[in-house]
Length: 182
Image (tube, rainbow, N blue to C red; front, side, top):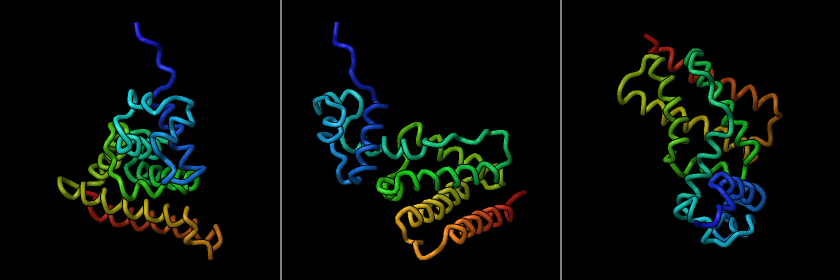
């Protein structure tokens, strides 16, 4: 009988996120995460295959940090809830958030968030390739705004202006999608 696991995938990802928050994304290595968990680096490989899988797990952590809106809500309310959630995540994790701009959602849990956006877009009346394109464009706009805000790019503006800009971005997205609402 083997020894009981001292860590879990969740513990590994949580330690990696904490490390990125405190020391920056470049500090996230298998060795540094293992050190934070007080285990050998080899112990991590039971839970993540390699550093790429660790980074994919961080994408998952960021995308699933906030609760998914209930499927019964109108499509536009769900998209706004998802956008607001990702903005909040960017504020909590400004050092690691840019990872969402460079890595796709590949884990099952991360893909569920992407699929929730696509389901809302289908309810908005989009079909086929329109759904994938709209998801890419909306995600890029929302992620870009959130990353810009979290990095301090909007520092010359007061919070009320930034909040009004985000509300305007959401209004534009809703307006663009309502044109296709059938």
